[in-house]
Each structure stands twice: as structure tokens, then as C-alpha cells.
Image (cartoon, rainbow over all chains, first blue to last red; front, side, top):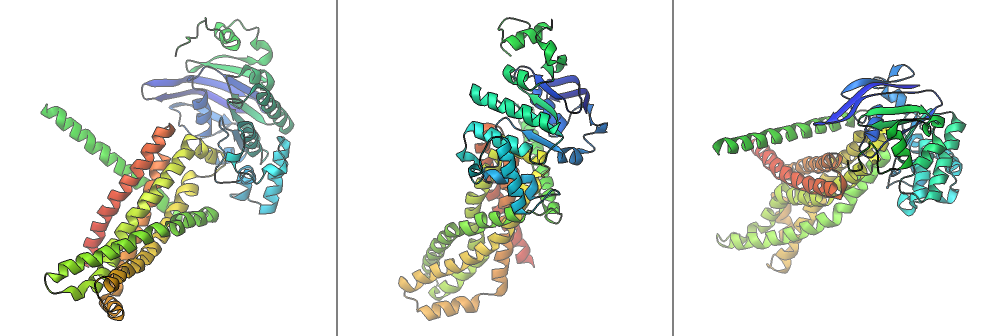
Length: 247
Length: 259
């Protein structure tokens, strides 16, 4: 279970997070929605320890992340917006990155076998294993990024804009893959996205971040029927409403 | 007016000191990680190949032309005192003590500091460095330590090879253009050269290698956003490495001179 309480973060005079509180239960898939620049990525980076919050607490299963970061990252996977694959490594070396070094190190042949298995899990054949990331399409790079995220069977997975830049069909494929791997592994997932088709495909619960605070938080089933005008405007993509079009 | 100028001077001084402090802390962190596991052997070997082996043509060409030009200059200067015979020994001493390490270091700075800064800067803007963190890997240890170690070890070797090529450049001009006897030229080169002449140049090479890789890694890891940020980081890495090499050269020469 991930619990965030009163999280605040400013960059200079700009206050990005103004007391965010959220709770994600074990095995639950939470999708955080919100306009550009509302602090969704900063929220993820605070949880990961890439950005130090000014105030607030983040705990995983009751333990503060800041004090147990190594242990948290050891059972964690993440799919980045641009996949963030390492250019100098082949696809299988990217997927097996953790298995080739550090405490989870395995013999090379075994690490490669796991990588090929994970690639198959995201619909990529073994012929892709020896290619470099630059030789792949955007959709294939996302799949490789997903295979890397699940390579060590993490219990917590983050997805940062998983469908950005993909055509609708490939976005649907990635959504289905995310859904199936998260359900199959029983992992706790946090996704940030603008893409409402992703939200509907992936989410158990949805949280809307606006002006540095959680504006609305509830089950996906309640999202369409909420009376919150901010959520209504966002999920229907309306130009008119309380959220300014120009920010 | 005066207050404004003083304030600007103060801001610049404080900014410079803060930057020096950040570089010092970064260097300290890199050095401390040199002795602590995990060690990334593959990354070290790749860096050794990229920094050492692939810089050899650039350093070799620089050395051969420098040695050749040096022979001509010393001959022209020596002729004023009827001391043309000093050409072989001065070329050798000048190459191994000063020009070999400094020009080799500057060429490696141009080639290596820029490529390290651009590579790591691009990794930063494409979130590859964040990805390393999420994969339980310390970016400083994985990216900076192997490169700094590889440069510190390989640049002295490059300097040694450059010294030999530079001396041979002088020999080519000396024998082909200035009328020196080949065996006399080589004997004079060998006889007047002391072990510490070579050793001091190699120590400088190690220091310059450390500076080059450190500046490449520091500026890459602190790169700004987008293509402009990476471009600025690359430029800063080369400028900082070049200036620090020249400053370190003076300081090391002063130390060797006083010893």
C-alpha cells in the first residue's frame, strides 16, 4: 500500500504540489489525470526520490520511502514516457539490465532467457532481442520499456504517459498489455496520463490533480457520474469550464 | 553605478565559488566511489576503448606535427647562437615535459569531454538517468566512475605514445630537412632525456585525463533541457576542461620545478 500525506513541492516561487494526499491499496491500479503542468510527473518523482518534497510523507506498506529507498526500488518497475531505453545497449540487455548487475545478477544466458520471455510477454519476438533501441518504432520501444519494467516481477509499477505519441491502435495494444501484466502480477500500479482511453482501460481508481491538489479521487465507475465540474470538463475535453484553456 | 558594478562582481564571484564547490563535491563523490563496489567492468572497458584507443589517431597526428614544427623553430632559434645541435634534445624535452601532455590533453578534451557531456546530457534529457535510478543503479557510479577511471589511466599512455611520435616528427624534419645524421639525432635525444622528464609528463597526463572525464561527466549530468541544454553542456565541458588543463599544467610544472 502506498500512502501520500500532505505532499508539497515548490520550484522557486512556483508551488507545484500544495498538499497532495493519496492512498493506493495493494494490487490496485490508480490513474492520476490532470492537465499539463499540474504536477503529475513531480508527484511520481517525489515518490521515487528523484525530487525531494518540501513537506509531507510518503510511505509504502507503512515504511517511509525516503528511509527505505533501496528496498522500495528493488521491487519497483517503471515505464517512462519516452521509454528511456539505454541507446548503447541492445534490447535484451535493456530488459535484463537489473539481471546483469547488482544484487539480482544472474548468469548472462539466464538473464537473456528471462529477457526473451518478457519480450514475448509484451508481444515481441526473439529476433528483436539483439537490435538496438534506435532500430525500433515508438510502439516497439514502449513495449521494450514495459518488458524492462516487469523484468524482475515488481510489486509496484509506475507508468508515465504510457500511450503518448502512439497511434490509437498501438495505444490500445499498450493499454491492454499494461492491464494484463498488472492484473497477472497483482502489482500496485500508478499511471499518469491525459489519455482517457488509457484511464478507462487501466484504472481501478482515478485521481484528478489540479492546481497542486487532488481535486477528485474515486473509483473509475464513478468518474462519469461525478458532479465535479473540473473532472467533467477534463474527461470530456471541453474548452469551456473552470479549467483555463491557456495555462 | 559603482554599487551596481560591485553587486555584479559579487554575484559573479559567489556564482564562481558555488560552481567550484559543486565541481569539488562531484569530484570527491567520484573518487570515493572508485574504491567502493559495485564495479562496472564492462562500462570501464568500453570507456577505455572510447577514450584511449580511439583517441590515438588524433593525439598521434597532433604530436607528429608538433614535433616537426618544434624542430624547425628550435633550429631557427638555435642558429642565432650557433647552437643548432641542441635541436634533438630540446625537441625531446619540450615534447615529453610540456607539449606532449598539454596538447594531447587538449585534443582529448576536445574529443572526449564533448562526447561524454553530449552522451550523458542526452541521457539526462531523455530520462535515461532517471531510469537508471529506478533500476537501483547509481548514475554517478555507473556513468561517471568508469569514464573518469578510464581517462585517468589511458591519457598517460596516450601521452607516452604521443611523446614517441612527436620525437619522431622532430627526427623526420631533423634528418630530412635540416641535415642531421639519423643516429646522431637519436643518440642526442636519448642521452639528454631523463627519466623524470618522461615521468612528469605522464603524471600530467593522468591529471589531465581525470580533468577531461570529470568535466564531461559533470556538465553532462547537470545538462539543461532540450537540444540547447545539451549543446551548452557540451560547450561548457570542453571550455572548462581546456582551461583547467592549462591551469593544472602550470601548477604541476611549478610543483615539479620546485621539487
